[in-house]
Each structure stands twice: as structure tokens, then as C-alpha cells.
Image (cartoon, rainbow, N blue to C red):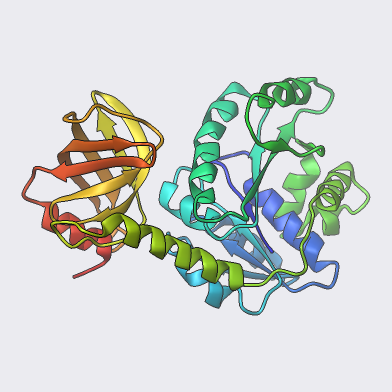
Length: 325
């Protein structure tokens, strides 16, 4: 089973939760892998404090996790992934592999607004990963306030489950991290430890996990891309690359399903007028350099938009997208 802690917003407690959930599973005599997908490598720093080897940790801050996960996960029944904030490509790759995505959300308007981007990404990922379930988790609630209840009521309008357990803002979480320990090790009788235990009891851990569904996902993504690129004037490459794009002064996010010297198909739930100018920006997975290109929207449908390039640097863009030299 693969459990991911995801949210576009930082500072909502993803790393703390990932560490403590992984420890809880390991305490049940299960072999666990925690994948630190955040470029900052916070989990590795935590583990190094006291060489805590209760569970295995690897650092994999790449948007190729959906391609690499079968090899990484082959010796484990349980994988916990700590996702980075504000990285569409890595988060999409994570969600393509995930069984349960836990979306921690603070009781604040900023966290609510940011969560909508993550919910949209989860919906996109479900097109290829039908086993992906998503749950909100109210996190970092201030003890003695009604803010958790207010957020829970606000979340009723979003089509995603909300965990019954709430995680409060407690000093034992901070103190345990500073010691390189789980709060279940540092203060096993604390309210913080009880909250983690209640959350993990609520999670339906599926011990029958098999990597076969990951193989199925890779096949589904390939079949989808092949269906999109058939009968094109120009042969198309088939990466899944996150892209920021601007249309009529407004910014959007999506990801490129396929690309050729003539244009690209961008998956997005937004609709646009054919003939409108579009500017696209993304980071090359090969060398992390920003790539910017302009074009014209030539098709708009429920699955996304077709774009025809206008500028001469399109060959450079394609090489950056497809990792070619």
C-alpha cells in the first residue's frame, strides 16, 4: 500500500505526519519505506539526528516516481511518501502511484485556497490511477478552538472525504522531531501520540498490496498517450510534464501529455476560445532550466487543449521535455 502526504501549500505538517505514520506501521512489525520526495530532504535530516533506522528512508525528489516506483517498492508492503509543496510535476508523479492521498489542511483560508489545486491534481491523477483515494486531514489545529469544526463545515462543499481524526498543534511533535524520533517513541502517552494512533487506526491499511496495479497504471498512461498522438502530421513524444501557462493575462497549471515540433496537448479542466494566444512555461526535467514558448490554441475540449507552436525554439523545448541531448 502506498500512502502519500500531499498539499500544494507548505507548512501544513506533511513531513511530521509521514514520519509518524511510517513509524506506526513499522511498530506493527511491518517493513516500511518512507520516500522523501521533497528536494529539501527534511526526512533524511531527521533520520540523521540519531540514526533512526526504525524504517527505511530514501530521497527521490523527481517527477519520474511513477516510472521508478516498481523497482523502489519491490521489497515493501507499505510505502509512505512525503510530497513537496508547489511542485506540480513531482506531485502528479506521486499521485499516479498512490493508493491513499492524505491532504493535511490547516484551519485557515490560505490552506483552504491552496487545497483546491491539490484536489484538482488528484482528480487528474484518477484518470490513470483508478485506485487513488483522497482524504482531507485537519492538521495543526489550535487546541481549545472551534476552527477545526469551521473548516470541516467548509470542506463539505468539496467532493472528498474528511478524516474523523484531527491533528492538533502540539509541542511534543516539534520536540520529537528535534530528537530524531517519532512522537510515538518520544512521548508514547502524550496527546500527540494518541492523535497519531487514532489516525492510523482510522486508515484502512491494505496488506494485500501488489505492485501489479503500478504496472497497470503505466500501461494505461501509455495507451492514453498513444490514442492521443495517432494520425498526427508530426510524430509526437509522450512525456507527462507539468506546465504553467497563461491565457489572456490569467495563469493556469496543467501537464503536457504529448508534444511534437508542431504543437502539444495540455491536459486541463479549463476551456478556452480557439485562436487565443497562449504562453507556456515549465522546468526541464533534464537540467532544471526554465523553458518558455508561445503558441495558439487550436483545439479546446473536456480533456484539455491542443496548442500549435509559433516560435523557433520549439526543437529545444522538445529535447528538454523528452530528456534528449
